[in-house]
Length: 111
Length: 114
Image (spheres, rainbow over the protein chains, first blue to last red):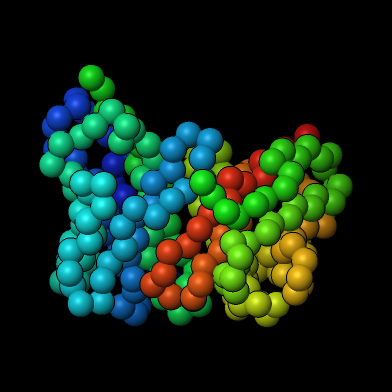
């Protein structure tokens, strides 16, 4: 079956430092990959999604590159902001559109 | 702000009781999903619909839940006989298409089974 692995459960870093959250996946098919962000007591919201033409998606300073050879879709940002503190989920979908989520990474950015 | 409306926000039920929650998807979105987010923040897909038809559901949903998305009425998810392990945040989401499109989530119904 499909699975998504996020190796870090908790990431804590200082404002201004680069962010990298890992995401690898397993799927029988060629899935679409997504990053969702969930702030405390809020609904999850789409941050990024993979493109079929391999363009690199960017949003709010975050970007991610789909590497099919290594089945990865790591999330990166050059300089973390305090407002980036949240729960980040990597997810994949194909077929009926059902999302398979990783276990999430809690990102805490400190001053 | 989320345009997927879920009610109630909080629900407390005793074991064995029915627990029903509702969802109004974003206007014009024919695809609706239900997910369960447990206390460890892990997501579990429950069921999805396109218009009124079920696209996919897991075994647990088929056996213990009742879900529907009637036309011109809110979608609903009902646990027939609540168990302690059902305590979780139930998230409804909707989208324009099945694949490679943004899925919009509601704020969820937090169910506590006592």
